[in-house]
Image (cartoon, rainbow over all chains, first blue to last red; front, side):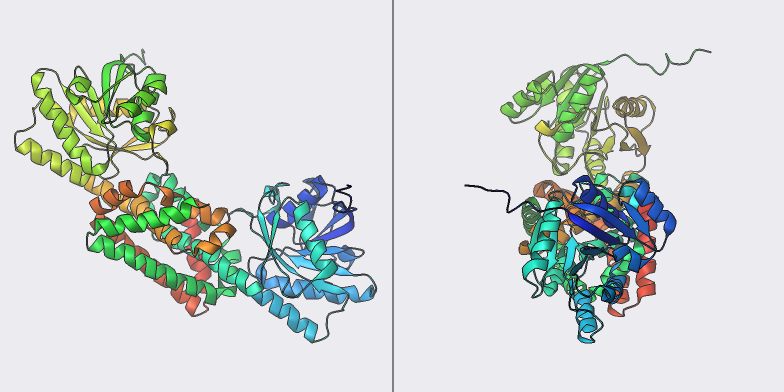
Length: 295
Length: 295
């Protein structure tokens, strides 16, 4: 019985990361620490940020030239904000036309998936996309309220879930993507882009909006009295406002639906309090605790 | 110039802690670790919990007999749930009548203050309270979602804020109480009980209710996809439901007022999302971030 060699795989020759911030930098660090690729090229608009990423070991080289950066890559990971992912992927695909025979897999790390996949499908339908280039969406459920390559962490994905949204993709590209994220220590979870976006509205996007609303509704004079309850509950409100504007607007209908469900639940809490109904309040708190304790 | 001796003070001979859970146990451990009292007597209804507290070093001795437990104490700290604090304090005061000459300071650690102080004032007015016994409310803004003496921590109050509500109390008891909490490493903040309850509604009680509502409104099937955003935002929902039922009902009018303010803010977020108003949404997220970043 000879187990193991079929699981092992040679390192990739080259991966390219478009957008080297907290997530892109952590992907690079994780890949390089684990020896999963010979070269990790960082591509960005800001040369000094690329220099910092290289000094931190997140990339083996950086370039502001997209065509140069993706040249010879087997995998391109788009780590730009959600509103830019489809455009950036399309640019990569268009530039790939100079190397028509080699296969390329593009993925991303965006917090929303359906719009990105729809835009990619539209570009493909418009024939602006060579057939050798495949796109499968990814969303690593990792990261925190910080931004910038200086917070990169080689173990950011260790034990975390990465959702991938094959939406019909199968075969070699799908296996390659699963292997890639598993190589970084992640658990890979497949679902459709629509399922992903509904789930994330409930588990991430609405909680972000509510944490922001809690912070915004707190009178400034009371903040000095905050204990760990307030600071934990509002932690994600410290996230980058522009990134979250994009995420919330991109997933707005699912987020509004999740908000409507939340408001129904909140009305039960308010009614229990207004009517001094201790038994109902206790039951609501117990039910919340049961769901919270399940994690 | 001779600084220091006036700050130093001999350890108390005896303090009694009524209710030895997470907070009571942490007070005991902190006092004993720092040598601030010769004896720390734990008083409770459950002998086996007192034995555990003694084994953990949180108390030097335990008793289920209140009269015996407070005998000879200079300070009694009521660490029972908020609905029981005034009753427990009144029992301590009534039992003190056998030792009419010695002064006794009672304090508590309840998360609400106005009702407790009103009830204590009512007992005092009814003459069921000897004049040697003083009560000044305390609220250490420390602790977490856990309960039970086994989670006690000698440094729980280190660097944390303890709000005290003198409501007219001055002189020796007030100085004694401030010195006590500072001895445990806390910063002491004085305010009226009403101010305290308004502030806590905004900074603690409403966030607890909202964290519970977020958890309760999350479809159970999505919880496995939760990242640190959801787990942090809902952490306090894992708190003891009975303790929080009492706190929320005790401070219900302030909590409902804070909830009304929150709902106004939330409506602005919802409107920005409904009307796809990216600029307004960005501004709301920035304002929330500004308040959150201030801590």
